[in-house]
Image (cartoon, rainbow, N blue to C red; front, top):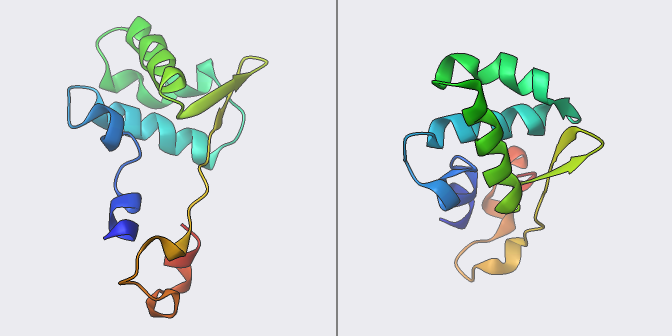
Length: 103
């Protein structure tokens, strides 16, 4: 269950399935897959999912405030939190596939 929860959309824990939950997830996926994204990159990627471009900057501020991303010199970077496979007494790391161990 620990690994299944971790694989859920990254924005889910903080924002739930609200109006912009899916947009937050798309933004985080973009930033995780392309380190050093600019505001222009994010706007191009999610502009069709929001009503106003100003909403994108509000979402980015919210993600930054929630500790989901860092901003350095105008670029966005993911904040990764370390996890341990020893969190559960019910899960043996040998039961996991390689791609699950790397999450």
